[in-house]
Image (cartoon, rainbow, N blue to C red; front, side, top):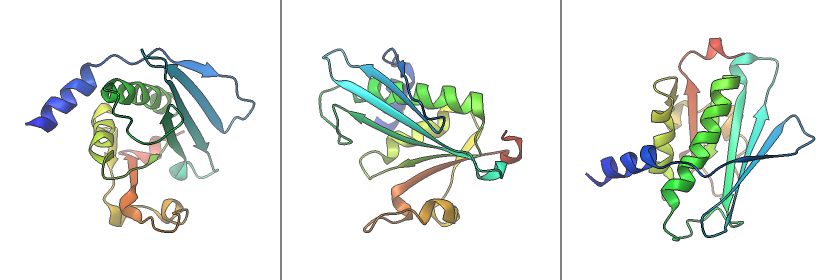
Length: 159
């Protein structure tokens, strides 16, 4: 039951207002927001856009108050919804074949909400189906279980 309540809170929580930060790179977009108590939220969308359209993806990294850890300040759902909003907007516009995030056991269920946000456009890949282009970049101590990869259900439609 808690999982359903959690997802309901995620989808009903309004995101913090986002600001697009100037970035001279066409390969990354930096978005920022500020929590009600003044902590900065930084979202980095890294665009990996090879010629092969079926290999294009957006890598997502975000931090709150300069950390990737859960802060325990009580607004995790609103922060997650802010990240989901940013990712959803870019994915709907650019239609990448994949969306990639690093996940740990504390965040994994939260990231599953991201898959539902796309209404069937993306599916979560089981670890044994994650392409090598993602697993070859794992750091020591990481395995495919630490990756959260969403694949566009119609990758051929990616631009």
